[in-house]
Length: 175
Image 1 (spheres, rainbow, N blue to C red):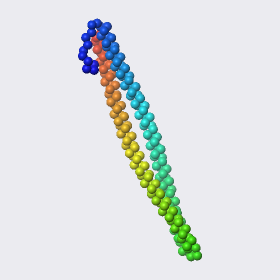
Image 2 (cartoon, rainbow, N blue to C red; image 1 turned 90 degrees about the vertical axis):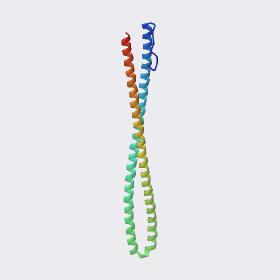
Image 3 (cartoon, helix red, strand yellow; image 1 turned 60 degrees about the horizontal axis):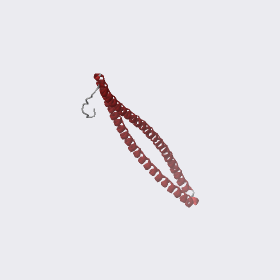
Image 4 (cartoon, one colour; image 1 turned 120 degrees about the vertical axis):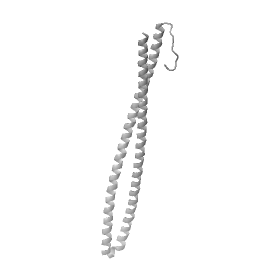
């Protein structure tokens, strides 16, 4: 009874009024706690759905980038093979040697730049993956905190229900 002293009543009507008022107070506290729990659960579900959607998008983007990376690696290999073929032909075509050589160097520079860009993209993908893992760990931590809070609120509800039962029993005994 919240640390209150035991009440003495001048009449049963006064005692009944006291217990009714106390019961209503506990009932209102119970309803407020239940509403808070419902709001919190709805918010948790919305947050979870949003984070799951973000995760799905990030995973899809990661898969797309990996597919692009594989395709580009294949293109690099194809271009390297073409470059080797051009070198072989350049030996046969002495009259076009200087022209072919300058073109080949330009292609080679582009390929090196392209490989560097691919490596940078790959580094970016790895950073994004690490960030996703950190984000998932943060989400898991927040979800665990929400679960603990829900358990605490459920315990509070159980305590309040127990108090309501005790109040009812005291009312019954008082009759």
